Amino acid sequence: MAKIICIANQKGGVGKTTTTVNLAAGLAKLGQRVLLVDLDPQGNATMGSGIDKREVELSVYDVLLESATVQEAVVKAESCGYGVLSANRELAGAEVELVQLAHRDQRLRSALALVDADYDFVLIDCPPSLSMLTLNGLCSAHGVIVPMQCEYFALEGLTDLVNTIKQVHANLNKDLKIMGLLRVMFDPRITLQVQVSDQLKAHFGNKVFDTVIPRNVRLAEAPSYGLPGVVFDPSAKGSQAYVDFARELVQRAPSL
Image 1 (cartoon, one colour):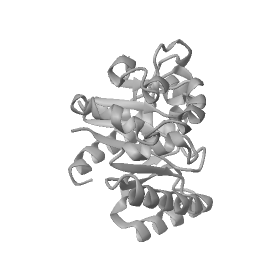
Image 2 (cartoon, one colour):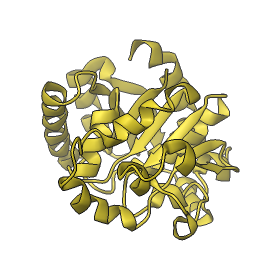
Image 3 (tube, helix red, strand yellow):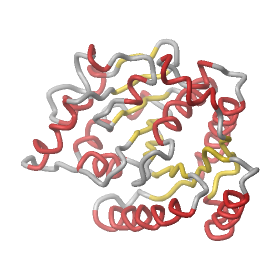
Image 4 (cartoon, one colour):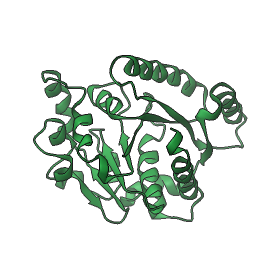
């Protein structure tokens, strides 16, 4: 049975897509069967996996509207070692079209149920807003990984996200929970970041992953080459940290 995980944070620019593609590549390196679902109409996770979103024939849009199955729409990211259910600008229109449909928040869940045995992990890259697309992701998932920078405003955004997850858990998906908080773009030389990191550990305890992703130029460069940092430069500190995180996630998975 696949572990379905949303990578979500209502705050933009916190490294959700970077985390999704690098975690997918890290898990693939460890021999896990991985499907990456790009639910963001910008399609950055698709492009960051080496797939041209403009040339994709079937996407997550077709899956949500039930004109294609996941198996038909998945594209193999050959250099990365995982499958991608891609996104492009068509997906923005799905918001409007889904509103009129029955079971509109359960479309992705139903589609993924058909490929449950084919993957060990399904990672869903959510857009930075609580939209019908994000709701589909949250209704499909067993849990949420929250990438966050150790800054003051990040704590405020976290409160909003926790409340959203509680509401979805209570009303739509009893399986949903916060799997953990991942500290990203971390610079130990900045006192405030160390203080916020300590606050997170004091408040959330073991919900804070042990792995910390450092601020790393190579991770930032990798998308321009259409690759996750883990594939683009495996020796970079950021890439090694994401492989460590993948290892930690595999170890924790049975109890998550």
